[in-house]
Image (tube, rainbow, N blue to C red; front, side, top):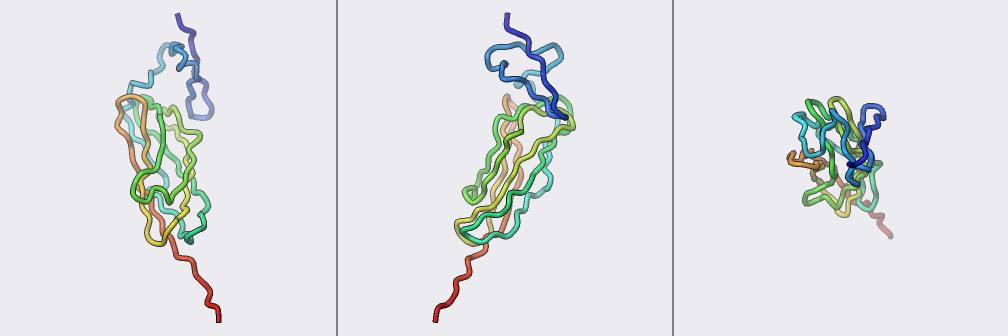
Length: 151
């Protein structure tokens, strides 16, 4: 018989201890990661628009709040940035995990462009289980570096 794991609540975010990966059982009333919630994940701001940034520099990271609204619970497996310009963006999502109705987590996203022009990508949230991924558009403008003229 595997040990029983009690979820620990920190604010509204539910963390199920890593003991689950060691074969521990969920307590009665808790949902397993494979049971998808019937809710919606929303991004604020939406769309995610970053400040204009000069090529060769990086913007300050902007906070993006991901909020789950609906029934059940979801377990986020990973968050990533995809798309043609994905390499021009950077992010951190260190506190996203198990979400229940009304709970949220933050991702921090910034622009670090390698070339000038409009930059577009998608923030993609993948879940454990069968729930399809959610995606949110990201955009920003990379401005060229101004070069001084020498006489």
